[in-house]
Image (cartoon, rainbow, N blue to C red; front, side, top):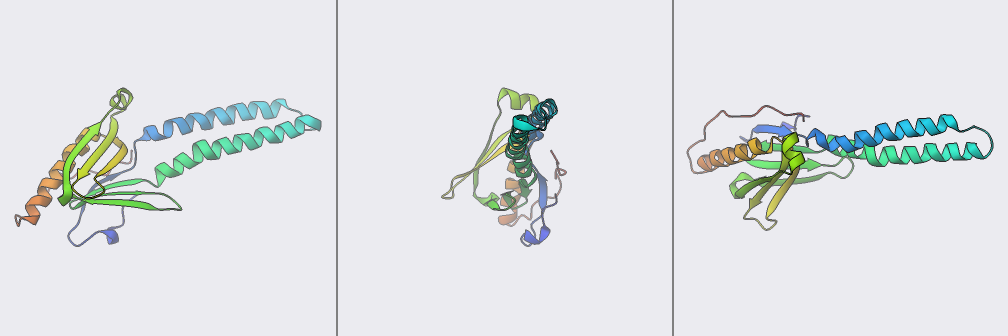
Length: 181
């Protein structure tokens, strides 16, 4: 899942990167298990001949539509979504066929907030909102693992970038490892 370094600017380094939290795959997994279970049960109970043969094909088609729409598609969305934090910007990339990207330079960051529901507190994830002075205003990143730690790290990266731009050079260290969650 490494972000291509050829897409980084001169002197830009990846501090950490991640995918959305694994909870994004919870409902798709439940739908997959339930659809396969019920579909298999009904297909084995129906006779292959006559009217029941048509119903059997219908059950298989409905199961395939449910699996593709509610399991495969969300899994591909999770798999193709990347959150990358560098020493100069926040990068969000998503999409398999239609690729969508949003970057926010750390120099424009005004505020970084997070929000956690009760379920997200239990699962240690949340929504990160990075606000800037730019026209588009804010970058909202949903389902971020360890969102409180990420918020602190974005502030740290901002301060280092600010020091670098002012001519202080910035300090090294404090880089989080990649999180595959």
